[in-house]
Image 1 (cartoon, rainbow, N blue to C red):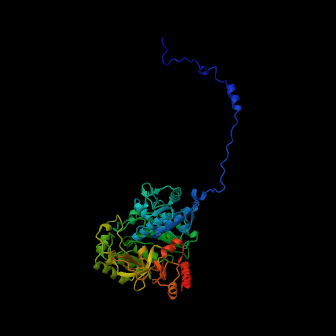
Image 2 (cartoon, rainbow, N blue to C red):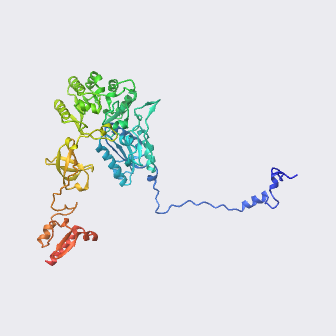
Length: 544
């Protein structure tokens, strides 16, 4: 029979070793003659330096900028505290920072413009960038946020993780909501490390989000529906703050009046608990509350505001005194509701300060609507009044409504642009009455008279938007001197017989007798105006 494929001619595995193969003893003898090579450590070159600080997360300098409300400022303080506790060094100087942490606000267009400009500025300086706050939370797919790391408004407790990855060159985006058993929480823990902007003031966010759906509000897209912190957590945070030397507490949220409605409690209950913890000489300040949710607590709120350790202050935004406009805004109250709140508190709390907000130029607002708001202001003469032009925020219902022309909102003025603002965000101009007007920082505006529409008024400034079809007017008869250039030299040239245009420093050529000297030639030769002036004076002396 023929052997099958499975039949083996080898009876034992040792049969695989042929007689010509080395024996085990011979193999061991050969190993003894092998001399192992020692591995040399790689020596550093004399001029080579270990860049440990630039490679290891937790060793870099970080500059943080926060825009917006006190809630956003509280988030910024928490992020700074966690980063510092992790080893990062917070700096007030953006130029020395390795990474910029930009904490944004989405309420108005200018705030987002500043945020976007800061991102661009950081990228131009080759800084690492991490963004936070309401802008990226509401619109993370914006083109100018492409490739950037994002910390969501409810993820500030993970700021160190995000910054660590950004330092390595990675992009991380954490935008989720914090939940417990399916219920949305107020946000990150309140006992996280914090660096207070003012060591004497503790800002406590008592809830996030709100119950409203205002048609102009972009913040709702970022902060969402109401989610309140439990009373015990808030009381414990207040205790901790007083033990750290704080003497003033600010309560903040998108709507403090709505506090607790999602967890079966209310604002007065929280306030009475907090008052028990306030030491003698310390004070509590309430944050903004919308009229609908404070109406049912007026008696309790009056008693609290009369407490010796609570400021007699309340911020209640009216936005408009026109019921028609309030309905379009979906504010869920009428003008009489607002007046009832103010009248009651002014009667029951002697000297109470009521602050309020007004939006001018909301879509559909008429002259009659606006006059109702003016009449309200004249009636109550609010000691603190915040007036803003309406801004159509992307994605909001109000942005799709028919807009009120900008020139209706403010006055049209001619202003002369001469300076740069302190924060380098605007050019500074002045109108006929020498009122400071901030205008967009465009190079073609410097030293020009331009026409603007005034759209916003602050305590010490106005803001103007350039009129589209208006052209800047140059008031000077010649181009201005460059910064650092010496004036008065042209008179000396003329006295010595040098013929030339009105200003040597602003001309293209200099005429010396029948010879002309091109200013651009001087630049190429590296000759400054001061040296050129000395040369010209010498030539004039020799020639004349």
